[in-house]
Amino acid sequence: MKNNYSDDGLRVIMSAASIRNEVIDTRIVETLNDIKKKKTKKSGQEKRTHKRTVWRKIAYGLGTVAAVFLVSIGICVANPSMAENIPILGNVFAKVQDIFSFGRIPEDEMTRLYDNVTDTHQNVNDNPYVIVDSDPNYLYKAQDAGIAVTITEYYASNQAVFFGVVIESEEEFPPFAVMGDTGYQLIQAFTRERYSFRDTEVGGVRNIEGRLEDAHTFAGIMRVDYDDINIDDSKYEAACREAEAKGEELPAVTEATWDLYYERLEVPEEFDAQIAIESLRGYCKEEIDAENGNQYRVRGNWEFQSFTIEKSGADVQTIQIDEVNEQGIGLEMIEISPVELTLHTVEPPDCLTFAVALDKDGRKLTSSSSNAYELAITGHDISTVTVYICDYDEYMDEIKMYALEDEENSMLEERALFKKAVDTR
Image (tube, rainbow, N blue to C red; front, side, top):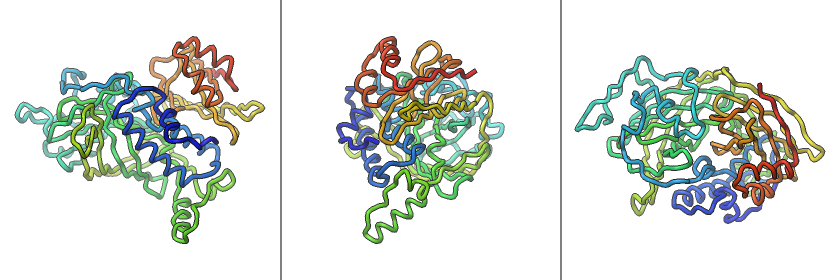
């Protein structure tokens, strides 16, 4: 695996555009630091299934911030009339589906995390969204530091869990930057998460994509990828602590030793989850102050009681392919839900590849998460999906540079190392 990139090289890979903006630069610096930590801890060739996920997240480490770019940066004026005229709590999926990167969440498959909640917001000083005392029916609402966070609903597919989140502030939020093709706004939650199928806690930085419904209210969707929570690295962490105590080098993880340090856990059809949030961070167009720059930051303790998550089996499928060419490059399987399609590719240890999927009409499916192979399918006919796997550098440096869809598709046909048309019906 090629991993000897300079900081400038990684900046090019992750941003993939000549756009310069403080928001992008800040995220790039943070991601580069994360990558360096991962490189120090995880040297050598990792087992293919884990290596594939790690590299995709390195190459697209900016997630939805840079993967779809800051096409337009602007200030969203607090204006409730911009949103649908429906209550927020319990309807977050419907409120923000027009700007969410993955598009529409199947509302008939979602689970509401409250019982018979009515809108109890009080109109105080003409502000309908000032925080009021917790309603006993708001089972998953936590308050601290002048901020109330409510987890209102969830949808669990075969690939990820999507949470509806409402964040209410006693003070007005700063105007957040507008990002991406869809014009969403972003608040990140720094979380501690526990799941019943694993013994150790998971720490994450979760993107909440949404918008300001009011100067005091942000509504959005938080996605938790199963690949983020199904790897137990406790053995490796213990080995690192032991090596540091002895003054030795950190253990190298290779294809042969991956199983000694890591365990891939099965995410069951039903499991319990407990989430706590330690801080929130938003990205603004303009500098807030000298200390925080363009970042809105709030520290606190928003801890929610445990609840049970049940996966929806509606319109989900796993299509096993298990085909490789003579070079060892190929497609293992495709996972599909009403929201996304995930590619699982195969590549030899000495080769770095990149896969592209086209829908029935020849339109490219685009990534909407930190994993470049998790592709949004809203608006696409995926009854037939054609997967092209190319040399990574050739795709990034040459093929992807062609902005016109027909030209890129033609080059995929000519230069792909592996091609597979899959009937998903």
